Length: 263
Ligand SMILES: [Zn+2]
Image (tube, rainbow, N blue to C red; front, top):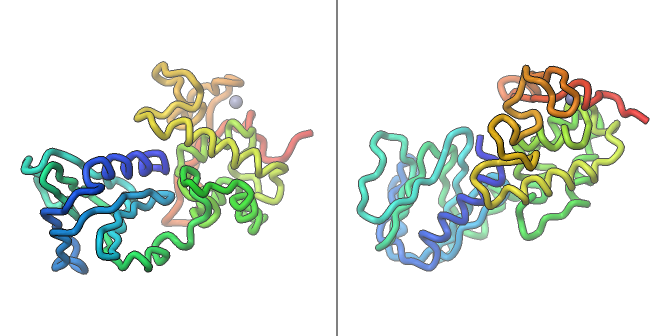
């Protein structure tokens, strides 16, 4: 699933192709907006907010999209044949470029002053201009009984983290994902780590959390379940966390990341 860094880069790519240009075509392939037509309007900007994308269009309209599990935006020169199949949910094109939203999880067209319907619930955005560490800590601390692993994925606490950054952040913080938030001594450290990791990766297409680009060494635990921990050598664990059907993969080292705080 695309995490905040991928969505951030997607917003930048969309911005380079669409911002400041007049739409010559819009094709909403979702029933609710099938008749919408943005032709003739200039795209003002595309911004990311956590894992959400907001494309603001002249005339007070916003196109809201979300990549969910497997969505992407494919950008190509105008007039190029679009990818075949029925997976395209939205096309926005100008005289030079066309952007095709493939397998998007959400497509909405709303008045710009109603953007909050989609992003108003989100906690501070790890890659946003208004990133606020203290507010993220405050929100995480609201439910001390929740596991820190679940709390980090809850976009109402802080926005942008998915399973990869969750696993890597908690490994670096030496905290088990199963530890209740109330037993995490320094939430600030965890939030700072998450921000630093995602910020360091926001411009590069291949994620590195270890500083080591070699294959199999670029992450501490994510993608390494069953293999030896790079720090202690013990086998890395894998499990599922969260209530069905929304349980999500969790990877951690049971030795380096104890469930109880240590002195
Ligand atoms: Zn370990």
